[in-house]
Image (cartoon, rainbow, N blue to C red; front, side, top):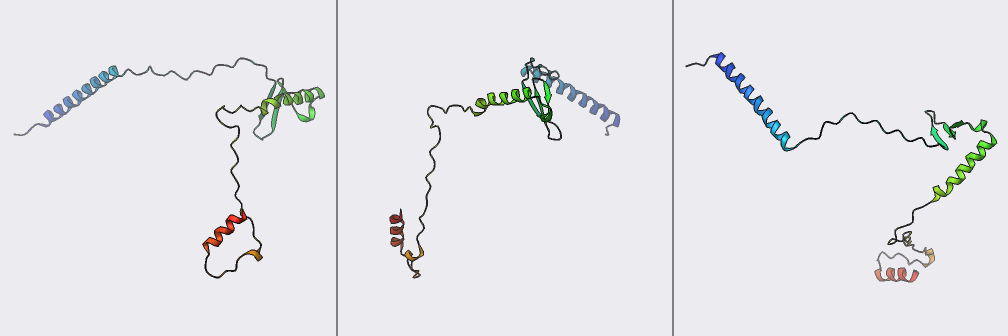
Length: 149
């Protein structure tokens, strides 16, 4: 007895349809067990910063030239007025303590680690060196090291 090709295609179609339905049902059951987060919307635009007065703004342009703005006004070194120059120097001087400030060390740690001891071997003049005999006298070498310290 032979099976007709139409019956095989019909059996294949039914098995594919049952597989798709079974996959859909299993996926729905899994999603109910582990609810997923709602789809993320487009990333929110960053909040605009509140307008703060910009006292000093320093940038570099593409050609690595300094772009300095003082109180919102662009500055050029050759075109600064004496008042602008004095204001700029005053701002930098006021910032100096902020630049030099250092956080205090934790109470349980020393402020700075003690320096590592420096070991140095004193140089002995050639006249004091023993003559090479081909034999190594270990104890004499140890006494020399101990006595030279």
